[in-house]
Amino acid sequence: AQKITQTQPGMFVQEKEAVTLDCTYDTSDPSYGLFWYKQPSSGEMIFLIYQGSYDQQNATEGRYSLNFQKARKSANLVISASQLGDSAMYFCAMREGVSGGYQKVTFGIGTKLQVIP
Amino acid sequence: GAVVSQHPSWVICKSGTSVKIECRSLDFQATTMFWYRQFPKQSLMLMATSNEGSKATYEQGVEKDKFLINHASLTLSTLTVTSAHPEDSSFYICSARGSGPLSWANVLTFGAGSRLTVL
Image (cartoon, rainbow over all chains, first blue to last red; front, top):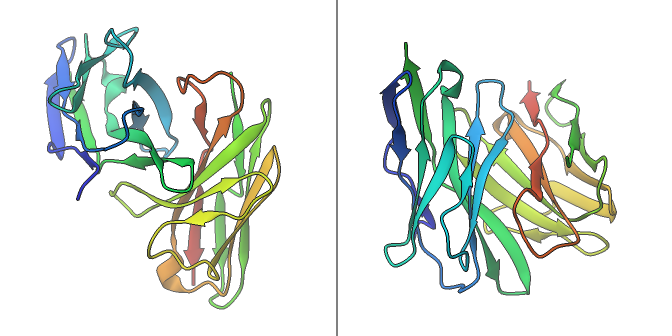
């Protein structure tokens, strides 16, 4: 079964508008964490935001906020006031504990966001 | 902030040769490093998790003898692609997690990636 599901292969958004990128997850570990990363065409992975499973409030980092719906197992990324430089691939990722006592981080398939002037 | 240096950025090699990719944490001690592989326009596929001083834990379907991972120190992990073949051509990315606070925020740092082309 997919651990991280991103159902939007591509999204368009008008510059200065807000956009929501969807992410749902599946885990049996009660202590887990969710990340969003941005990957521009250069290939580097840029950390955007993190949400721990026990965090009471939704995480925010500047123009990025994470809409954490624990019961629904969703962790959508909201980008406010989109900029042309936001055009990139966006990956949702989850860390969870696995057998053997170690943690691993797995990624969704990504959403390609294009900001239109 | 935490920086992870990965090199080489690009490498082209002949089929049958071995290639080593290094991943270094520059300003923190990386207790755990993850190695990912990414095909064009696809997601990152976790290959293995390495903890300093112990053997790497490989994901199902990843050949241990093909992709040798060493994490000999708290600042260095290496991935060696042995007897490389054209199908091994890919983008390989490492990430490192530091020790210290329990919070995972900002402690999973990625290298810039290494693009391997096997002729």
